[in-house]
Amino acid sequence: MEDDRAGYAGALEELQAILAELEGEAVDVDVLATRVARADELLTLCRERLEAARVQVEKVVAAAEDA
Image (cartoon, rainbow, N blue to C red; front, side, top):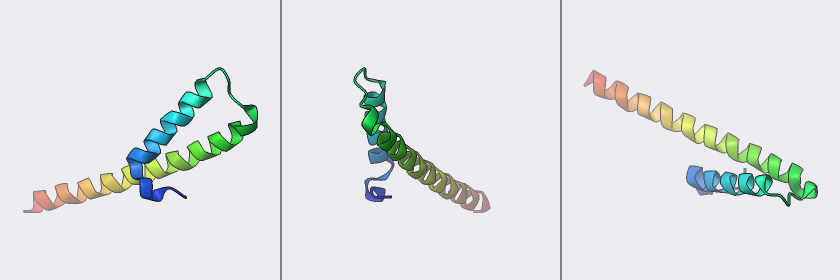
C-alpha cells in the first residue's frame, strides 16, 4: 500500500473523503472503480492497524496480570 506512512488516522480521513465523494450527486462513473479500490486498500490498512493495536493491548494486559 502506498500510504502506510500515513497511518490509521490518515487512512480514515481519506476514507471519509472518498465516502463523501461517492455520496455526492456528481459521482464520476469513470473514477468510481478507482475510488472503491482505494477504499478497499484503506480499509485493509485500518483493519491491520487495529489488529496490531489489539495484540499490543493484550500483551500489556497479560504482562500486568503476571506482575
